[in-house]
Length: 328
Image (tube, rainbow, N blue to C red; front, side, top):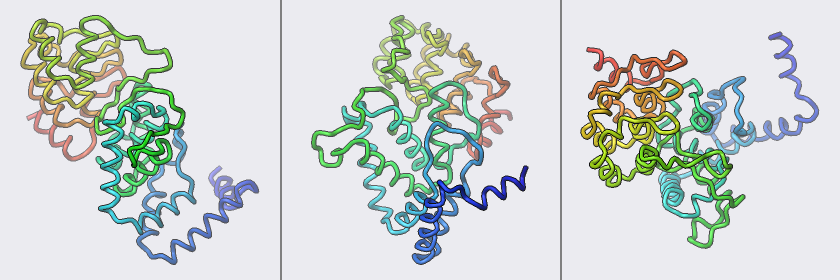
């Protein structure tokens, strides 16, 4: 089987020969411009996951070669400035909410790669949206930060024509849908517009919505009147701590833990998949929230329905040191 695969790879099919020919011409061009661009391209192509299926279309070989050439010529300071302007526009502009979910996922992946580097987890998390966001981020694995920034800006130029000039922005598709792409790091931001989401009008549902939106004062007012509410679960079997940990809301997490005895006693409460708030903090890459949860008694050894503990899911030196210190 291996030899068959090798032989088939050495002779491209007729339909792909033109693409390979184009790619080979670009390889010659890369070689002519210097070894640095070659190194960038090799780092990108070598980081690809072989055999991994994803609904997100990855860049072609020729596209990556072109990006390597452009990346070598770009000025990092200019790229960073453009990226800052783009992320600010997405997170603050009303028009940013009209982007298609497919485009928001792609922007999310580029943003996370640019600001946090490679996705720390190598296993697709449970949940539809969590998995989609993981795929978007992991599809950028290996890309240097300046290149991920440039991809973010280039995509925004493509899907939101006019955002740079402050003119009336033309959004590709134009259907308003909601999902976090911006500097807010979340795995569970709601995807609406397809009729699948039903608003939770219960008191706990409203509290979790305020947490999801980062409305600290509103959360404080609710907990002042009903502190026990912080120990309950919403329609998705998520507690307020699940939401705060997912969104990286340090102030809200601390408020919940210092206000509600019910929340403290249920700090390792599980959602429908068996994940605790600490699982969410790990999967959403929010180590500061994780430290706070552990400080208040969250158990990193609690397993979810798949037998995974927060400690199992965490990767990286910072996480290792955190869990090592929590066990001593």
